[in-house]
Length: 349
Image (tube, rainbow, N blue to C red; front, side, top):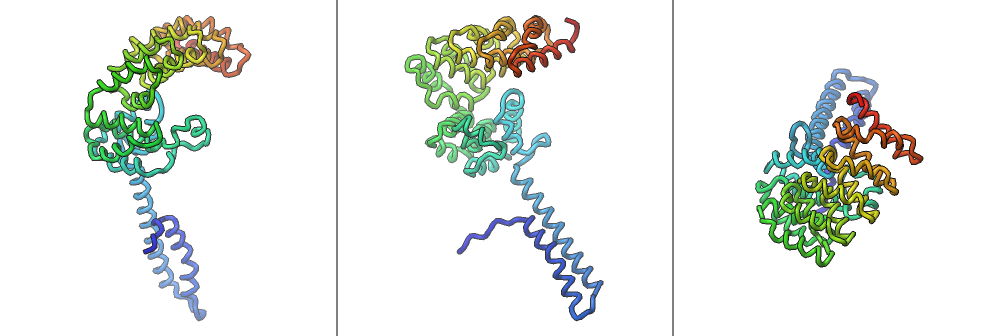
């Protein structure tokens, strides 16, 4: 038996509209035009068209999944792939939707299609592991649903053997959250990283765990202090994604802004940018980092201060920002001036 093409309400509707001239021609056959019968036919065609449009809208809405606070699951899923507060909101949304959203997420998990919110080839060139972004993000969302997502366990178990590191790592993290597994094994693996320098699947497992990984933050801070720039850089990147325990992480990040390694300083500046207003205790180090020899470190320092421009601590950055507002690099100059304007609007200097 041949496979039938998928139902397309738009195509069917266009066919109905296109059939109207045929109806007119039929009613005009023999030179006699039956106006009443033609109008009756038109009314029937119009009714059918409206019903198809309604059906199409329903199917389109259903494909976007259930809604929470007026947003479809599809929109929350794209938000989950972001950073900061918007990602936190998405995690909370999937947790609140619970079992209702699980069938829809499982379909996304197994769809083997690209994420609709990634529109540029650059996204894949920048992060090759994210080619399977829809699968990995759906797995993360199932983990955020937690125990009500038990029905997804067989699918997630299958993905733990996937050849894509991002996919299998997020599936492993989701299973930990759904089953309520302890993190002892992750703690042991983190202790081995300092000795071997090998992270394997740990970074994306930790990112997938999200807030559940808070108890592992001290181990990550310990890895930041290692003399191995590769290990330190990876630990900084994970902390940037998690944005947990600022009271112990932010001072560590501030210290790493003075590292002799360019990549470590950049990762520390990026992490502080992710912590945003929580990075206020690092203001002094951030002001010093504005003069970093690498513009991208300086830029992230400025962007971090911009996020708490209304706080008293930001006013201490005004002299440095005024100087950088004439910087030879455009993005430094622009961000410095924008931050300076925000500070000035917040009150007298």
